Image 1 (tube, rainbow, N blue to C red):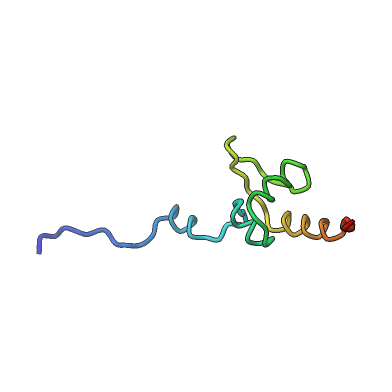
Image 2: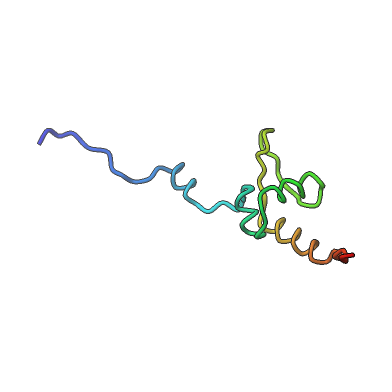
Length: 84
């Protein structure tokens, strides 16, 4: 044996924290949670009806599940327009 030690395959602190579940949802995750399309998520954020954290400046949005749930509750309270 040469006496060399080989690195172990234990995860570093940064990779284990990346594997941890984040409370933040991206647009796709928020759309899946609300069972709507991503375009509606963007439209509701733009209209000010859905709270989002803006990251960077290129349509990078993050949501907390509570924000998406609150938006769904508010949307369900709104009167639906009657068909003519």
